[in-house]
Amino acid sequence: MQTGTEAEVLKLMLDFQRVEMVRLATGLTAEQAAWRPHDEANSIAEMISHLAWVERWWFGHVFGGSALNPKDDPLWPGFAAAGERPIAELVEFYVEAWKESDVVWVGADLEEVVPTKHGPTSLRWIVVHLIEETARHAGHADITRQMLDGTRST
Amino acid sequence: MTELNVIHLFEPKLATGDEKALLRTHLVLAQQDLLWKLEGLSDEQLRRPMTKTSTNLIGIIKHLTGVTAHYLISSFGREREIYAWEEGDEPEFWFGGDMWATPDESPADLIAAYRRACEASLVALDAMDLDTVGTHHTGVKVSLRWMILNVLTDTLRHTGHADILREAIDGSVGVDPILSNTVDGTDDEYWSKFRQRVTGELTRDEWIAYCKSRD
Image (cartoon, rainbow over all chains, first blue to last red; front, top):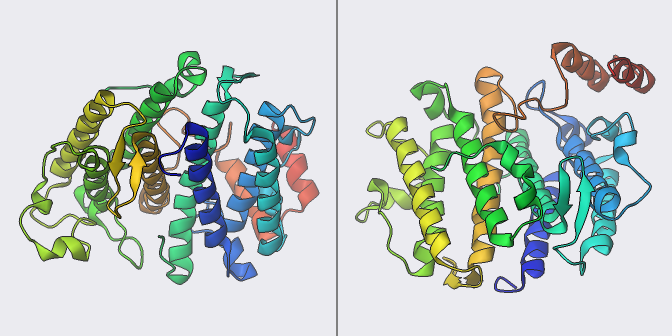
């Protein structure tokens, strides 16, 4: 797989970061999941909720053309949507969102272009962007988790 | 380092262009964003251990210097600069020695070494095609395509660490030098209201009404 096609490698990399997010969100109490290291930082629960919304935005709405547009919701970009929902439920919501994403993009042509507010954008760009965004949030979750209970990243 | 503007993220040529140009540009942007996270801090702030495992900003740079050069250059059988802390048989290298700056190492020198590693990696990257096969340190055969994404995600993950550390040090936040606001149009009042929502002082309806009132 590490020497596979472009689509295979992108899927591998995206899944790795998604699974890392789930690992970092697993085994937390409700209080830990809602804890934030600083005022403007996000809790792990909020990051998971946000990433589910981001999946639905980029893959579902922008690329897939789904009528469901997360940006129409005042809670966009979805951090605050975590609310009081139990972390296990949020994780389930995230996994469900990424499975829906995969139905939309896996097997599609990476050169396929859709309009965005930044101009025409390829599926390749969208997948790389999701990998980047998920990795950066996983970095936030690494430190947040480390501050919470000393769990170290891989 | 090639000075790229974050606007390049959305440049039509890249947004619809070829795979290698996209990966290359995004790698450079990730490296620049990470360096931006360190700007304006004193040596003491850069060295300060911030977590139980002593994560510190300059250590992230020192660590990624070796990671970037090793993965993108050595793994493909190419010669590269050996950094001072990698020389000889210094056993401390294997015990966290690349995760912090010793008193003899200046943060400015370490940042300069990271910039050299980034530049040399781009030279190597430009000389190979994405299907070139190299060897990961675990022995697994990997393509250059995989390796660029590996270094890109590793850099971003560490930038995520730096986001939190930097905020703890001086309160600065932001994704990159241009999109520095975390949410469009946010200000202190927004964050104070958001905090009230999180602590339960504001109900869902009050919070949504506040957000809508800002439009």
